[in-house]
Image (cartoon, rainbow, N blue to C red; front, side):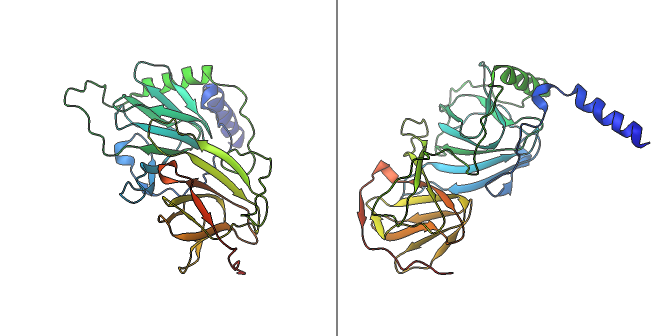
Length: 298
């Protein structure tokens, strides 16, 4: 019996298309959030990171997680920027070739453009979406809307895989890429490392996203931002504190909000490296620096 089971397993693997094989590490850096599968084919979750409001004036920002072989229907929405986080995904704009989305890849989707997106058949996929949630479709909009058929999905997978790079660059332990040249500044007690995840030229009209990597025990001075700052934790464990307030412990998926003019500090814990995305509303980088905090010993 065992022999025949083994033969059957190899037979199933043999008939799978090459593009459907596991694309690598399927671990996910962000928590799943709420189940929104009712609107999709397969299993999909949404984790809301930033809600649009009047203080920070940032676009809606969510993490969407697709289990293997899960995908949306054809749909439209406000202008959206998609950032691949983990696994391998698929995106197709109506009438255009499909593309694979891998960690660090970015897709800009103009408002009102019909498209679908999801995961590839054997890979979980996690993406960040940044978009204008207040957009309303024009009354005369003629975009293609409806379910994506299995044939459309697998045709998209096949064509995207044929056009994609066959070698996937090996990433280090961090979610996003960054410069390995240390940044040394008197405003941090040790060197940090910087990368840029999102530049200003994105359709979602988001400020740029800066990626900051703190080695263990590294932190900055008390400081304030003219327009405030939003931090999205991505790796390891870190600290954030607004002066006079409670010390926050940040883990991947946690978001820290520092209001305009408030004094705060942030950095890694003593026994964990830490990385976060830093967003300055309005792309205003005017900062006032003060003395170093009493670093937490716990």
